[in-house]
View (cartoon, helix red, strand yellow):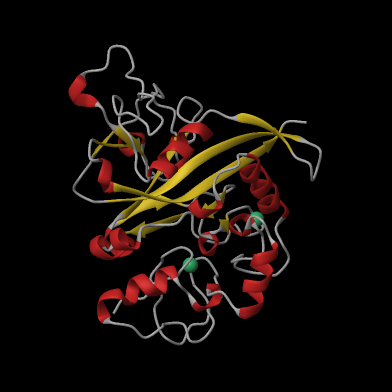
Length: 294
Ligand SMILES: [Zn+2]
Ligand SMILES: [Zn+2]
Protein backbone atom coordinates (compact mmCIF):
# COMPACT_ATOMS: atom_id res chain seq x y z
CA UNK A 1 0.00 0.00 0.00
CA UNK A 2 1.50 3.29 -1.06
CA UNK A 3 1.75 5.84 1.70
CA UNK A 4 2.14 9.51 1.10
CA UNK A 5 3.20 12.65 2.90
CA UNK A 6 0.30 14.86 3.91
CA UNK A 7 2.06 18.05 2.87
CA UNK A 8 3.74 17.26 -0.43
CA UNK A 9 2.10 13.92 -1.28
CA UNK A 10 5.47 12.33 -1.97
CA UNK A 11 5.60 8.60 -1.44
CA UNK A 12 6.77 7.76 2.06
CA UNK A 13 9.00 4.70 1.88
CA UNK A 14 8.49 2.87 5.18
CA UNK A 15 6.67 2.75 8.50
CA UNK A 16 9.84 3.61 10.36
CA UNK A 17 10.55 7.06 8.98
CA UNK A 18 9.47 9.89 11.23
CA UNK A 19 9.59 12.65 8.66
CA UNK A 20 8.97 13.08 4.96
CA UNK A 21 12.22 12.64 3.06
CA UNK A 22 10.95 14.99 0.44
CA UNK A 23 9.67 18.02 2.28
CA UNK A 24 10.69 17.38 5.88
CA UNK A 25 7.19 17.23 7.34
CA UNK A 26 7.37 15.59 10.77
CA UNK A 27 5.09 12.61 11.26
CA UNK A 28 3.64 11.83 14.64
CA UNK A 29 2.43 8.40 15.61
CA UNK A 30 0.08 6.90 14.84
CA UNK A 31 0.94 8.01 11.34
CA UNK A 32 -1.45 5.84 9.44
CA UNK A 33 -4.94 5.71 10.82
CA UNK A 34 -6.55 2.34 10.38
CA UNK A 35 -9.43 2.46 7.97
CA UNK A 36 -10.86 0.50 5.11
CA UNK A 37 -8.39 -0.21 2.32
CA UNK A 38 -10.29 2.05 -0.01
CA UNK A 39 -9.80 5.17 1.97
CA UNK A 40 -6.40 4.62 3.49
CA UNK A 41 -4.70 6.98 1.13
CA UNK A 42 -7.42 9.56 1.39
CA UNK A 43 -7.44 9.44 5.16
CA UNK A 44 -3.73 9.74 5.42
CA UNK A 45 -3.57 12.54 2.95
CA UNK A 46 -6.31 14.57 4.39
CA UNK A 47 -6.01 13.86 8.09
CA UNK A 48 -2.45 13.33 9.13
CA UNK A 49 -2.40 12.82 12.87
CA UNK A 50 -0.29 15.90 13.33
CA UNK A 51 -3.04 18.05 11.94
CA UNK A 52 -6.03 16.49 13.62
CA UNK A 53 -7.60 19.06 15.88
CA UNK A 54 -6.54 18.49 19.47
CA UNK A 55 -8.51 19.70 22.44
CA UNK A 56 -6.42 22.80 22.93
CA UNK A 57 -6.60 23.51 19.21
CA UNK A 58 -10.36 23.50 19.35
CA UNK A 59 -10.48 26.05 22.11
CA UNK A 60 -7.95 28.27 20.42
CA UNK A 61 -9.84 27.94 17.15
CA UNK A 62 -12.95 29.22 18.82
CA UNK A 63 -11.16 32.37 19.85
CA UNK A 64 -9.92 33.24 16.39
CA UNK A 65 -12.28 34.77 13.90
CA UNK A 66 -10.37 33.33 10.99
CA UNK A 67 -8.85 30.00 12.01
CA UNK A 68 -8.15 28.90 8.46
CA UNK A 69 -5.65 31.64 7.98
CA UNK A 70 -3.88 31.49 11.31
CA UNK A 71 -0.25 30.54 11.50
CA UNK A 72 -0.02 27.73 14.00
CA UNK A 73 -0.17 24.90 11.54
CA UNK A 74 2.03 22.63 9.56
CA UNK A 75 5.27 24.42 8.99
CA UNK A 76 7.48 21.45 8.52
CA UNK A 77 10.46 22.34 10.58
CA UNK A 78 9.88 24.56 13.53
CA UNK A 79 7.39 26.14 15.82
CA UNK A 80 8.64 29.64 15.01
CA UNK A 81 5.97 31.24 12.85
CA UNK A 82 7.19 32.25 9.42
CA UNK A 83 6.95 36.02 8.88
CA UNK A 84 6.37 35.63 5.17
CA UNK A 85 3.52 33.25 5.84
CA UNK A 86 1.99 35.72 8.31
CA UNK A 87 2.16 38.45 5.67
CA UNK A 88 0.59 36.22 3.03
CA UNK A 89 -2.12 35.34 5.56
CA UNK A 90 -2.71 39.03 6.21
CA UNK A 91 -3.13 39.63 2.48
CA UNK A 92 -5.52 36.71 2.08
CA UNK A 93 -7.57 37.94 5.05
CA UNK A 94 -7.79 41.37 3.42
CA UNK A 95 -9.66 39.76 0.50
CA UNK A 96 -12.46 38.72 2.92
CA UNK A 97 -13.10 35.27 1.48
CA UNK A 98 -15.40 33.06 3.51
CA UNK A 99 -13.48 31.02 6.13
CA UNK A 100 -15.45 27.93 5.19
CA UNK A 101 -13.55 27.73 1.89
CA UNK A 102 -10.28 26.90 3.64
CA UNK A 103 -8.69 23.84 5.18
CA UNK A 104 -5.71 24.97 7.24
CA UNK A 105 -4.29 21.47 7.48
CA UNK A 106 -3.00 22.04 3.99
CA UNK A 107 -1.37 25.39 4.62
CA UNK A 108 2.27 25.26 3.63
CA UNK A 109 4.91 27.89 3.10
CA UNK A 110 7.53 27.44 0.39
CA UNK A 111 9.69 30.44 1.31
CA UNK A 112 13.43 29.79 1.48
CA UNK A 113 13.28 29.32 5.26
CA UNK A 114 10.37 26.90 5.27
CA UNK A 115 11.42 25.03 2.13
CA UNK A 116 15.23 25.14 2.02
CA UNK A 117 17.31 24.97 -1.16
CA UNK A 118 18.45 21.46 -0.33
CA UNK A 119 14.96 20.11 -0.94
CA UNK A 120 13.73 18.96 -4.30
CA UNK A 121 12.69 21.48 -6.98
CA UNK A 122 10.26 19.11 -8.65
CA UNK A 123 8.07 16.20 -7.63
CA UNK A 124 6.33 13.52 -9.57
CA UNK A 125 2.64 12.95 -9.00
CA UNK A 126 0.57 10.40 -10.90
CA UNK A 127 3.54 9.93 -13.21
CA UNK A 128 3.75 13.61 -14.08
CA UNK A 129 6.40 16.12 -13.07
CA UNK A 130 5.44 19.39 -11.42
CA UNK A 131 7.52 22.22 -10.05
CA UNK A 132 7.54 23.10 -6.34
CA UNK A 133 6.22 26.65 -5.90
CA UNK A 134 9.31 28.09 -4.24
CA UNK A 135 8.72 31.56 -2.81
CA UNK A 136 4.96 31.07 -2.57
CA UNK A 137 2.79 30.27 0.43
CA UNK A 138 -0.16 27.89 0.17
CA UNK A 139 -3.46 28.19 2.01
CA UNK A 140 -5.28 24.88 1.81
CA UNK A 141 -8.79 24.73 0.39
CA UNK A 142 -11.62 22.43 1.38
CA UNK A 143 -11.87 19.63 -1.16
CA UNK A 144 -15.06 17.68 -1.75
CA UNK A 145 -14.50 14.33 -0.05
CA UNK A 146 -16.70 12.52 -2.55
CA UNK A 147 -14.64 13.78 -5.46
CA UNK A 148 -11.43 12.93 -3.65
CA UNK A 149 -12.56 9.40 -2.78
CA UNK A 150 -14.40 8.48 -5.96
CA UNK A 151 -11.69 9.75 -8.28
CA UNK A 152 -8.70 9.07 -5.98
CA UNK A 153 -7.47 12.52 -6.85
CA UNK A 154 -4.58 12.40 -4.34
CA UNK A 155 -3.22 9.26 -5.93
CA UNK A 156 -4.22 9.37 -9.59
CA UNK A 157 -4.43 13.03 -10.56
CA UNK A 158 -1.52 15.27 -11.44
CA UNK A 159 -0.63 18.61 -9.84
CA UNK A 160 -1.15 21.76 -11.91
CA UNK A 161 -1.30 25.53 -11.41
CA UNK A 162 -3.69 28.19 -12.64
CA UNK A 163 -2.68 31.84 -12.30
CA UNK A 164 -5.42 34.44 -12.22
CA UNK A 165 -6.69 37.60 -10.55
CA UNK A 166 -7.88 37.48 -6.94
CA UNK A 167 -11.46 38.10 -8.15
CA UNK A 168 -11.39 35.23 -10.63
CA UNK A 169 -9.68 32.96 -8.11
CA UNK A 170 -12.46 33.68 -5.63
CA UNK A 171 -15.08 32.99 -8.27
CA UNK A 172 -13.52 29.60 -9.09
CA UNK A 173 -13.22 28.58 -5.45
CA UNK A 174 -16.67 29.84 -4.43
CA UNK A 175 -18.36 28.23 -7.45
CA UNK A 176 -16.56 24.98 -6.58
CA UNK A 177 -15.49 24.68 -10.21
CA UNK A 178 -13.72 26.41 -13.02
CA UNK A 179 -16.00 28.33 -15.35
CA UNK A 180 -15.53 28.55 -19.10
CA UNK A 181 -16.16 31.71 -21.18
CA UNK A 182 -19.88 31.94 -21.90
CA UNK A 183 -20.84 30.38 -18.52
CA UNK A 184 -22.90 32.52 -16.18
CA UNK A 185 -21.66 33.20 -12.68
CA UNK A 186 -23.97 32.76 -9.70
CA UNK A 187 -24.58 36.53 -9.66
CA UNK A 188 -25.85 36.36 -13.25
CA UNK A 189 -22.75 37.91 -14.78
CA UNK A 190 -21.49 36.16 -17.89
CA UNK A 191 -17.85 35.08 -18.14
CA UNK A 192 -16.51 37.23 -20.95
CA UNK A 193 -15.77 35.66 -24.28
CA UNK A 194 -12.65 37.24 -25.66
CA UNK A 195 -13.08 38.74 -29.12
CA UNK A 196 -11.94 36.43 -31.88
CA UNK A 197 -12.35 33.29 -29.78
CA UNK A 198 -13.60 30.21 -31.58
CA UNK A 199 -16.61 28.72 -29.84
CA UNK A 200 -15.19 25.21 -29.67
CA UNK A 201 -12.05 26.50 -28.02
CA UNK A 202 -13.25 27.69 -24.64
CA UNK A 203 -10.47 26.13 -22.66
CA UNK A 204 -9.28 26.18 -19.10
CA UNK A 205 -5.51 26.66 -19.02
CA UNK A 206 -3.18 25.24 -16.39
CA UNK A 207 0.51 24.41 -16.14
CA UNK A 208 2.81 21.98 -14.31
CA UNK A 209 5.07 24.93 -13.49
CA UNK A 210 4.18 28.00 -11.48
CA UNK A 211 6.81 29.93 -13.46
CA UNK A 212 4.39 29.83 -16.40
CA UNK A 213 1.12 30.22 -14.47
CA UNK A 214 2.40 33.30 -12.69
CA UNK A 215 3.43 35.36 -15.75
CA UNK A 216 1.79 38.78 -15.70
CA UNK A 217 -0.66 38.17 -18.56
CA UNK A 218 -2.35 35.33 -16.63
CA UNK A 219 -1.64 36.45 -13.11
CA UNK A 220 -1.90 40.20 -12.57
CA UNK A 221 -0.45 41.58 -9.36
CA UNK A 222 -2.29 43.96 -7.07
CA UNK A 223 -0.80 46.25 -4.47
CA UNK A 224 -1.24 45.52 -0.81
CA UNK A 225 -0.09 47.48 2.24
CA UNK A 226 0.63 45.34 5.28
CA UNK A 227 -0.37 46.56 8.71
CA UNK A 228 2.30 44.28 10.16
CA UNK A 229 5.23 45.83 8.29
CA UNK A 230 3.60 49.02 6.93
CA UNK A 231 5.22 48.17 3.58
CA UNK A 232 3.62 47.87 0.15
CA UNK A 233 3.77 44.58 -1.76
CA UNK A 234 2.83 43.32 -5.19
CA UNK A 235 0.54 40.39 -4.46
CA UNK A 236 -0.16 37.53 -6.86
CA UNK A 237 -2.46 34.52 -6.64
CA UNK A 238 -2.15 31.10 -8.25
CA UNK A 239 -4.56 28.21 -7.68
CA UNK A 240 -2.97 24.79 -7.05
CA UNK A 241 -5.05 21.98 -8.52
CA UNK A 242 -5.36 18.28 -9.03
CA UNK A 243 -6.13 17.47 -12.65
CA UNK A 244 -7.31 14.23 -14.18
CA UNK A 245 -4.92 12.56 -16.63
CA UNK A 246 -6.41 11.84 -20.04
CA UNK A 247 -8.73 14.85 -20.05
CA UNK A 248 -6.34 17.50 -21.32
CA UNK A 249 -3.75 18.29 -23.94
CA UNK A 250 -0.26 19.68 -23.50
CA UNK A 251 1.20 22.32 -25.77
CA UNK A 252 4.00 24.84 -26.01
CA UNK A 253 3.84 28.24 -24.36
CA UNK A 254 1.52 30.79 -25.99
CA UNK A 255 2.99 34.00 -24.59
CA UNK A 256 5.60 34.51 -27.29
CA UNK A 257 8.57 33.53 -25.16
CA UNK A 258 10.46 32.22 -28.20
CA UNK A 259 13.83 30.81 -27.18
CA UNK A 260 13.68 32.36 -23.73
CA UNK A 261 13.26 29.47 -21.33
CA UNK A 262 10.35 30.07 -18.91
CA UNK A 263 11.01 27.32 -16.39
CA UNK A 264 14.33 25.56 -15.70
CA UNK A 265 12.57 22.22 -15.20
CA UNK A 266 9.77 21.99 -17.77
CA UNK A 267 10.61 22.81 -21.40
CA UNK A 268 8.68 25.62 -23.13
CA UNK A 269 7.16 23.01 -25.42
CA UNK A 270 5.27 21.45 -22.47
CA UNK A 271 4.34 24.30 -20.14
CA UNK A 272 0.72 24.76 -21.19
CA UNK A 273 -2.13 22.36 -20.44
CA UNK A 274 -5.63 22.98 -21.76
CA UNK A 275 -8.97 21.29 -21.34
CA UNK A 276 -12.68 21.82 -21.90
CA UNK A 277 -13.62 19.46 -19.06
CA UNK A 278 -14.58 21.61 -16.09
CA UNK A 279 -14.90 18.68 -13.68
CA UNK A 280 -11.38 17.44 -14.42
CA UNK A 281 -9.74 20.13 -12.29
CA UNK A 282 -10.07 20.32 -8.51
CA UNK A 283 -8.52 23.32 -6.73
CA UNK A 284 -6.89 22.39 -3.39
CA UNK A 285 -4.75 25.39 -2.52
CA UNK A 286 -4.45 29.13 -2.95
CA UNK A 287 -0.83 30.12 -3.45
CA UNK A 288 0.16 33.66 -2.61
CA UNK A 289 3.31 35.53 -3.58
CA UNK A 290 4.27 38.90 -2.14
CA UNK A 291 7.09 41.04 -3.49
CA UNK A 292 8.09 44.14 -1.58
CA UNK A 293 7.59 47.38 -3.50
CA UNK A 294 8.40 49.94 -0.82
ZN1 LIG B 1 6.41 15.71 2.27
ZN1 LIG C 1 7.93 30.51 5.16
